[in-house]
Image (cartoon, rainbow, N blue to C red):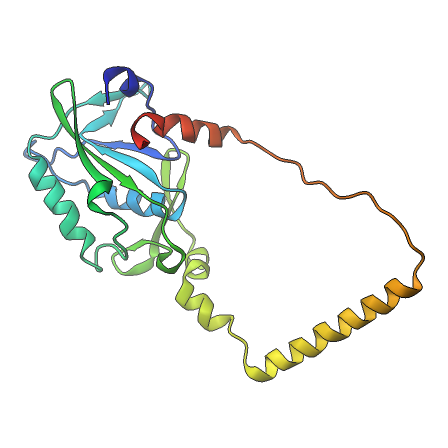
Length: 215
């Protein structure tokens, strides 16, 4: 990552910068890292750069991390703690060290979570599930988090055998009625329905934001 690439980066849907300097200035994983980790995982993934901060004008200031070993060790230790975060989505290639203007940075690439692990939540509580909305990490509404949980949905949506039989009978009856009506109705030709395609501004800004360091 060079200076030219760094200059065009801005925080957004899939990019976040955090200082990670700690009280002693040597380096510490910020508490807000985990909210962003959860938000990126539950949305479309994203990149977190540790060792930088956003200026008032939206540009990024490089500060660096003096003790990268300490910060990276803290990251991996917490990822293995289910009381801290519900799922570890990272591999060794997800975390890299990069240098810019003589400053050391830690770059964390967070993938979108798998269906079985969603929603990624904190402190053992589904109520601490986050999603990314532009530049911010927003806490999910409890009902949304519960609905996305595969364990809950698999229990609540699994019909009993008697219910399944009733549903099958109803579906068969509806199909038979529709087939009978189609045979008796005059032939008509209708124009196909089309669905408009949209390209939102947020989608473009997301790709623009992470392009240089996502590859």
